[in-house]
Amino acid sequence: MSNTTPKRHLWRDIHVFDGLRTLPESMAVITEGSRVASLVAMREFDEGLAEGCIDMGRGGVMTPGLVDCHTHLVFGGSRADEFEARLEGVSYEEIVRRGGGILSTVTATREASEDVLLELAKPRLQALIADGVTTVEIKSGYGLTVEDEVKMLRVARRLGEALPVRVVTTLLGAHALPPEFQDDSDGYIDLVCQEMVPAVAREGLADAVDVFCEKIAFSVVQCERVFEAAEAHGLPIKAHAEQLSNLGGTAMAARHGALSADHIEYLDEAGIAAMRDAGSVAVILPGAFHTLRETQQPPIAALRAAGVPMAVATDANPGSSPLFMPTLMLNLACTLFRLTPQEALAGMTAHGASALGLKEEGRIHEGAIADLCIWDIDTPAALAYAVQPGRLRQRLFQGELTHAV
Ligand code: DI6
Ligand code: FE
Image (cartoon, rainbow, N blue to C red):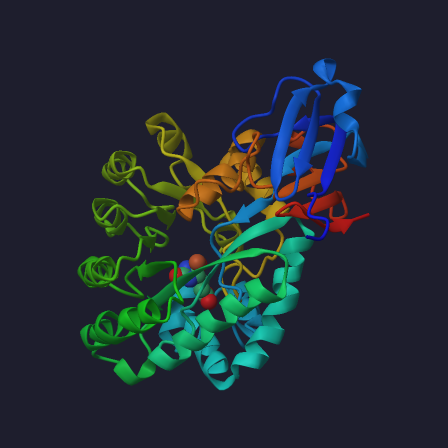
C-alpha cells in the first residue's frame, strides 16, 4: 500500500468560536485527515503533539467553515433595471404584478443551457467561498417547468463537484406562478406535486422542498399540498414565509416539521410557538430586508426568548438580495436586527447547518469535520463588526487547505 498517513495541521494560540460560543481560553487545534483531532487549551499543550504536524501559524480566530443555508445562486439574467425602478419608488410587489421580478429571471433562466448556468453561477459561489463558506444551500425556483427545475438542480449538484464546497440542494418549484398557468395556480401546484417533486426525488436531485407562501406567490393551502407531496417522497421541507405579510405559513410549515422558516419579518406569537414546538430554525435574511428597504423587523427578541434557534444567510439572488458576501450578513444581522455578534456567527455556523438538517457541520469539537476558517482578527465579534474582505487567512474543506494568504 502507498503512504496513507493522513495529513496533520496544527494551529497555536488561536481563539476558537466552536459554532455556538467562543471558547474561554487560547487554544491549540490539530486536524488529522478530514477531522479535527484535538482541541486543547494552550496552557495544557504539550509540544510532543506537534510532531508530524504542518505548522499553520499562531494567533487569529478559528471558526467552523461558514454555512450559507439559503441562496438562489443559479439563475440567468440580471435585474439591475428593477433595482433602478425600485429606487424610483416602485414596490417589489408591483414589479411582480407587472410580470417582472422573479418572472424576468425565469425567462432568462429558461433560455440558458445547463452549461451556461453553471458558468454564470461559479463566480457567485467562488465569492461565497472566498468569504469563508464551506457549505451552501442552493435552491431552484427560476425554471418553473419540470425540465427547467431539474436543469437548475443539476447545475447546483455540478457546482458541488466543481468547487471545494458542500452543496445542499432544494426544490423551490412553488416559487412563482409561471405565465403558462396564469389564472390556474391550483393547476400549477398539481404539476409541482404530481410531476416535479416525484421527478427530482427519483433522480436524487433535491435534499429538501421549499415553497414561497405569500399573497404574490402561493397560499397556505397550496403550500401544504406541496409539503404533503414532499413527505410522500421522504423529502424534508422548509418555507419562505411571513416575508411580506402574515399568512400563517410558518405555523403550517412547523406543523409539518419544517427544518426552517425563512424571512419571517411578519411572524406572530402563534408562529413562534409553533416553531419552538417543532424545533424549526428561524432563518434570518438581512440582505433581503436591506435591499427591499423593509421596515417590519423580524421578531428577534421573541424568538430568542422562546429559544428558537436563529440562522443567518445571504438569500443571494438577483432580485431581493443581490449580495454575495456572507460576512456582510453577519454585520447586517447585528446592525439591523440587533443580534449579538455571537448569535450571528452561530447563525452562520451551527444553526445554519441545523436549518439544512446537517448535524455534523458548522461546529468545532474533537471528531468534527475539518471545515474550518482562520481569520486575521482578534476576537470572533470582529467578524461581524467590520465589513472587510481579505481577512480569511486560511480555509480548510474536509481537512484540505483550499485557501491561504
Ligand atoms: N423570497 C426572496 O427573497 C427570493 N425569493 C423569495 O421567495 C427573491 C427571489 C427574487 O426576487 O428573484
Ligand atoms: Fe429566498
